Length: 229
Image 1 (tube, rainbow, N blue to C red):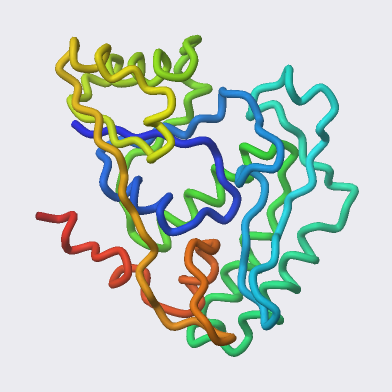
Image 2: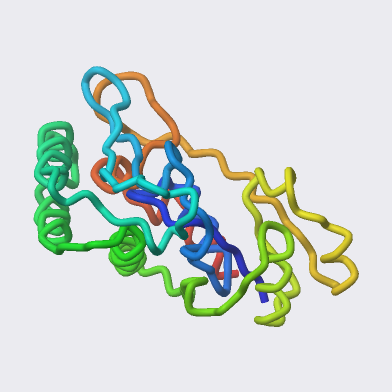
């Protein structure tokens, strides 16, 4: 049983989905603290002038005291129309644009008060779009009070996991000896975005999933067949 976990992410990069695809269970970490200027509420797409940010505006007053699932979107700002226009104008020449853009228009027609709800529903959309069957559970549903390494260990024990797939930054805080005592192997994801055809010249890795989705076939990029073995 392999589990992984990650905080919510707006229009995540390809590595986010690689982690989910390689897991039997993915924990959507919406019960931890919001980190300003992270990828939780923003990501990059490619324009003719290089990478540009798409950011969901949030109300940040007292955000250090709030959990991610308590962060409110600032819907007074017309961010959805701006994001759709950016996606339209920068990907209208992409190979998958005509088929995919109506889907993203429909997705953006939904309204959300909380950032984590938006990220979760968008994530479900992407998983259905790519036919990824990994089970997803929000951490806010689990009543877990631990932090950092203890939180991850508690998740592993709760679901009887024998393997935890961590992002590379987990090396900075995971206390691996505690996992070994419970016969849980910690594996660090080593994902590098493979080359695929992009618009606008030189390849830029690690962009939002939008870029791959519009320009290529994600199943061949992530090599889905490798994970079925």
